[in-house]
Image (cartoon, rainbow, N blue to C red):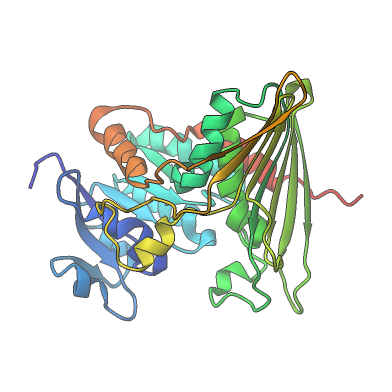
Length: 343
């Protein structure tokens, strides 16, 4: 094993630890998966026989060999555990939402400077296949001057989540804080900080304590407007991305396969990992100078969360800036925490 591999601990071996983190950390060249926290059922050793299973976060943080801690616990614990990990001398990779508000986020970034450790935020959907195609269309200015962008994450789940922290009225709960950070991060990574923003949230499921519908409206220079929608009650999902410009339009359904593949046990090193199936292509519609309409279908680029972990390694071992910048996270928090518009 390379002496430069980063010894890593994961604070929870639930779905996110098992699917989004362990398969990438357990690959020997860049990382060493040393330990996880499993308070109840011990399952990690079934797939990773050499892993240490600690009973508590405190035990894992006291492991002096661990350099990097992945904070993937319930949303309302992120700030507390991230603070403890930094004070224990660990680099941290924190799942979304990074914090419930910008003040807490700023305190964590300041603490990281004080202790000389890196804070990175796990905004993995920058590396989704469908978003990467949208990014290419924007960067190549295919549609001319941009007018409006609609970004959606639609689900239909009338029943409450078994993850109670998502359903209780506590910091970081509700669909806006669950799905909003993904979508906001994608938009901010493309266009930066908006000039203004409006937040709309509402609840429609019987007995729900938290929002299950949310819309954010972001305005940028030259009249460019972004609409971000996240809902738990959409029976027939609309395209994930619809972009209009002065020369044409682009639309793409949400089709990234990485989560399903990882759930099914496919390795991130598999040649077919991250490749969308046929029939999910993005559609570009351009208007020619003579007024004729030209339609082009474009395959998505390969989705690859490996690149996020490449960036984690490059930050810690090579000092290369992590692509998800602190100021971008602070902008995200400021938009999420603003008072909702009531009409």
